[in-house]
Amino acid sequence: MKISIHYAFLPHTDADAALGFYRDALGFEVRNDVGYDGLRWLTVGPHGQPETSIVLHPPATDPGITDTERQTILELIAKGSYGALTLASDDLDALFERLVDSGADVVQEPMDQPYGVRDCAFRDPAGNLLRINQAG
Image 1 (cartoon, rainbow, N blue to C red):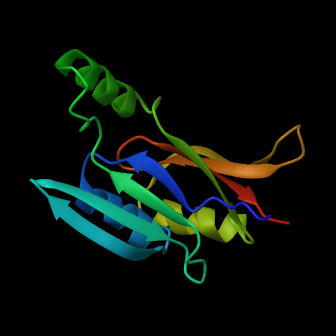
Image 2: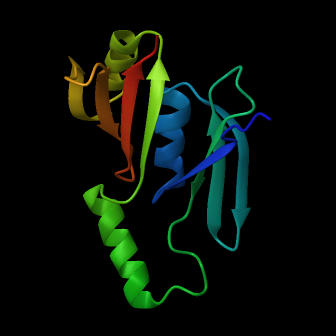
């Protein structure tokens, strides 16, 4: 039996800014762009890997969430304490430079971690933490 991750979900607070980061800076393809009731959901993923996608969704839209809970979620997103994802690249340094050139928010430059991984970190326009590991 094979089990794989098909969708991961991250909130976005500005769909156009999210597209600028995930499509233009990271180079992901846009697989779906759906608007409903004034809100927008984006599905993106790496070229050549149709089985793996990230759904960028408007945060705190569940009707069961109270206004107070909604405000807390938005505050956590703004602090960068709500969503996170780890990616991998076969050329971490080149991807890091491409993201820097795009104006992405750098959290950590590429470095060798004491636990054996070389990685860097960015925040997307909503504040989600993206760590990027050197693959292989």
